[in-house]
Length: 125
Image (cartoon, rainbow, N blue to C red; front, side, top):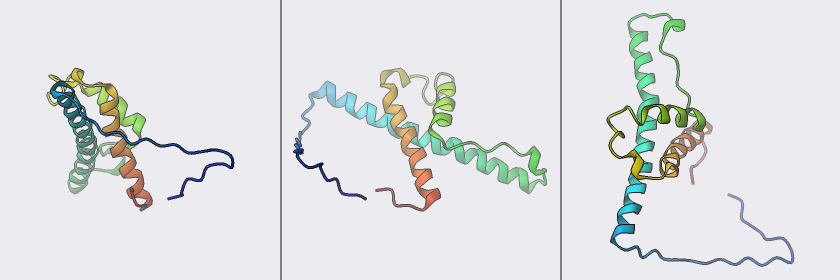
């Protein structure tokens, strides 16, 4: 990872803040964190389900052009699939509206980035 170097004549100022949420804010923080994790897990399951389905179809001798299509790990495609299924699927139907869309997007972005790093065999951090 490249180390940040300020341009000559510029000063870098940083602040470190500690969160001290009250009970209500703490519940919201945990809910948003859980939403991100749920979206991440959903994305991994969504993609791997297609992989396993293709593998089963191949074992039955189904031709390559008739197999279940691959699903993309790209963030836009994951976001589109998640948005199509979040209202209808039982996993998110009761509580997805309680959190910011950015909480779910964080989980989907994490799944997409992890796959891109794995594909490139790069360290994640």
